[in-house]
Image (cartoon, rainbow over all chains, first blue to last red):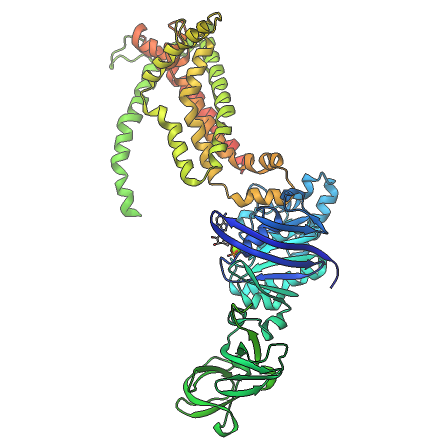
Length: 348
Length: 272
Ligand SMILES: Nc1ncnc2c1ncn2[C@@H]1O[C@H](COP(=O)(O)OP(=O)(O)O)[C@@H](O)[C@H]1O
Ligand SMILES: [Mg+2]
């Protein structure tokens, strides 16, 4: 990717006695769609507010184009925010809301009118200039908030769960539009969400956070296919997580059997955890598989069946289009590349 | 809904007895001659014509002038206080607002007597000045003492509505303004002030009405010669005994206040 735009170095933040951020290190690049993903309360908003300038970090640095800015007030940063509840000014109409930043910079009136019009077009609200913002729908307010931020041509746009208040259908559409807008204006988006699906569909880079710490940074595919630990595997999609040992490169042992895999670089006989995604497991005849069990429960889920298979040691969740009736003895099979080996939580 | 509508009936009766009927009586007095019996009513404009005499017009001008100054001072001092209070955590705010209202718990008469003790020629301030070797200052029975009394008495009526509008303001609007490049001062001017205008108008209305129609404070702190509309009305009823003229003045004051309030309402609408 291109140049580094923002660097977070060893950021910590305490509120009273509570440590909310415990050493965040993150590089954010120009033109990147980066998502902070994690459960509620893990420190995503706090990280975003430090970047915006609403909070000062307790320790650590925020570099913007290589310059330390953690003490710079928000109005001096080339960063704009789309707030969770939009925070549109109720006393101004749509056009005046969007023009707020430009008016402060004393930009020429005719230039402002042009830019506002162009922004409204981009967010699909042509002709809404004189509307009362308090009478707009949630989705429309959202678009005004995006236009109001982008019209200032910031280097970075921060979005804190911007789709959280919208209903499912508009959400999907806005996800698509936001991604399109980001590619159109070609600036960095830092996006906060607790919705893994949203993060995976929109982002170039996903940063998984938990409890004030970064768990993994990577592309959506990396995060999904190669979760680094149990937390990430659990948080992203559904998983069967099994403790085991790495016998040697490309050979892993769990549930009493040895299996081929594609992972390497662990120590010999290192204790690890293995992720098997339910959709990677197949139901086969018992004699064709090492792992065997009894179908405990089968649920129809639309596209696939979700089948719980009870082995001697645990219950595996399988998602497959094949039906298997409860009580049947079956085997479980998977390919070497479906075995994702992770460091054991707390081991590093 | 229908169910609840019935419950309002006692209040309608109550309002009719205590507000509407006295108003009708006042109007009746205002438009009739002195010494009338109920049966021999003779209507007249005389009481209103009398009001146009320069002494009385001057009283009105002075009342409004004092009302305007008092309102302005209350706004000037009350807004910053309301603003500061609204910056505190919610619990502290409740306590601070309570503190603001504490003086109102004590009878206005007592409070005003207290001011007399402080401001009198041999009062606390002058005794202090004397201790410091300075010449005494005459403060009682001046515009200064009256305005001071009015401002101190009516300040809470300015602070509370402004504080209400400030504290219910969404704090993220302030952050949004900073975010879009507004300095703290610009944020105040373009967002905070604008959004608090309904509270400001309410406060202005309350303080102005109270200070235009008051009579206790100017009487005690301004002395017997100090005439405001309120005192004029009071004296017509109590000492002069011209109820007809007193009623006419009351009516005029009520009309002026109504006009004033509708003007404020209109400003409020425009702001929205
Ligand atoms: N201003 C604040 N004062 C005290 N605690 C706070 C404040 N802001 C956030 N917190 C706490 O910090 C933690 C992380 O909050 P936040 O960054 O908002 O999480 P997220 O956005 O991931 O849900 C939470 O436990 C929250 O209660
Ligand atoms: Mg949050």
